[in-house]
Length: 156
Image (cartoon, rainbow, N blue to C red; front, side):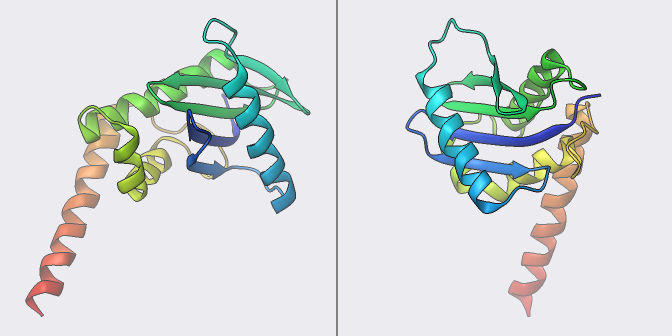
């Protein structure tokens, strides 16, 4: 089973759009990882391998439209292909939820994007839910609870 160390989502311009740390890192380490990986991934050509070695672990990344999804994984324990599948499942789920997801959907609805991510990956970095349908049902439930709360606030 794959356990992520972190997941970064950034644009072609290097702007961070979403970030989740699954291991404890100091602030300096986080800043270094973001800076170095953003520069490294953006400099790679499209035909190059999506797996690179970085510090004491491996980095698996995939580009979808103008966004790069980057995951850090343990080199001994984790499966690179499963990590690519986790990234793909996250993108597919967001695509179905937002209806053809784009960078602006993530920018303006980042809490929903984080909720989808949290439905797929536990706080320790392990992949927990593989069913897009179940994730989307849970998101619909969250949305209905939120709309009911908003309605109640409007009536008060």
